[in-house]
Image (cartoon, rainbow, N blue to C red; front, top):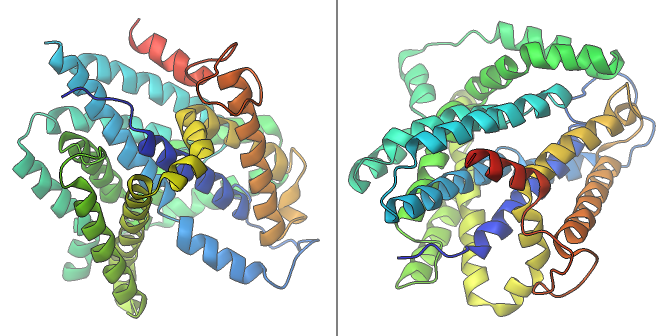
Length: 377
């Protein structure tokens, strides 16, 4: 069947990127120091906890799931034309890695390079039958590395991670721009990889990439057949899992259960958005802006790294020592709104309200168009 544009996927991308911007702002784009913060509010701690529950460990996962969905659509489109997409997709991942190098030069928390490497693993998985793919998803979802460490009483040494992290954070606060660039290019990928091992995202990231591919293969993001009923069931089951785990004291099981808990919240969020999207026309109209934001997800992701670091780092406005959690969230919200205005101007040639009026605008974001052209060069 033809793979038409999945607008709810665009809306989910918009939610993911906006959530990443807000939570990165809360974390001051990874600047944590003992220096006193000038402007704080009594609600800072509550705001931080709420945003951590909503966004931390979830938004990057939604982004990964939709990355896998995009791979399936492109791969399936070429297969329907009798062509192989494997070599072209491998080249596409090389390009994404290069985008990641640009991003990590500004912000050490780049995820694009990891997506590029994991994306290569999607190529062999895409040739497997669905029954095997679901087994892979199930195995990865139970956090096999953390479960192995728990059962065998094995401890992973994270000393190297903390050493690199402390050095990097110190440069964010007090280093020059070029000192940060050199350090990030030298240690950024290693820092991210080690953090993914530490946080349980090493296997979960690939799990979500494969899950997105499989959901595309099953056409579950389309309003076809019993799909909406499936999403309702997924919403109910994930909500029950979230509620149940919320009453569990993780203690010694923290490293194993925390990623699983985050995965349940992620699945609940996705199921709720998809269910509401197809059930209510008002929701679709309300999320039009998020769709626009999500269609330019690569551009917006790189923009937030550049803008956020200039705002919070020591070589910029040094707002890491000025703004508490709540004020930082407001800055992040301002970044989202500013980037959304840019998206509207780029897409429609101005602040038009009609999605069909694209006179003077562009069909894709600037980096999305560059990526596309280089992919098919």
